[in-house]
Image (cartoon, rainbow, N blue to C red; front, side, top):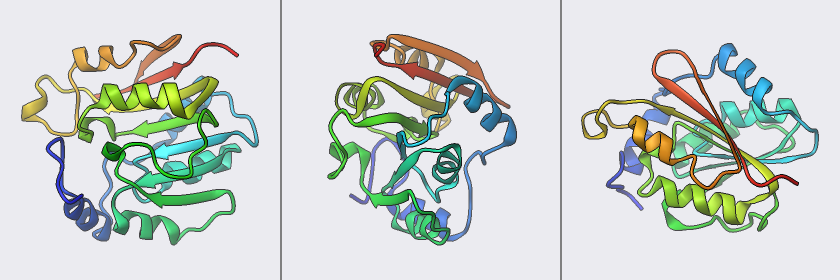
Length: 192
């Protein structure tokens, strides 16, 4: 797929990755908030959906997860693979095109969607698929999205209403703010 009505074409993402550009870089403040809201258990399985060049995927591994990073930009994945880590693998897949091959049904403990949802064709349907097919019972999801006042004027963000709608269907939803306009959602499926 080379274009997406919700966001930039894959060639645009490739060019950004080739140029070394990052979109809202990972910070110590975000990592500390993540660690407070997501208890880390060694050996658990995580997916970083829209992993880009892999900084959060590598951090998840440092926290003790076995990680699969998924992105549709081959250039971003090439950059991610330049820092190999045992326990971290990367796969190319367009999240708008269904479930990636090789992911275990109901076999994932944590799915991360950091700065990815606004670029998907139907973010709510994708999150429902993650909750119903990817995650184990008691599984969790970490969502980071920029808040915008009007989606059409500022690509890459979601309105307060859109963000609120993302919490529907989850047994537990905790929202917290990060620097600037970033909102985090810590979501959980039904308890184990």
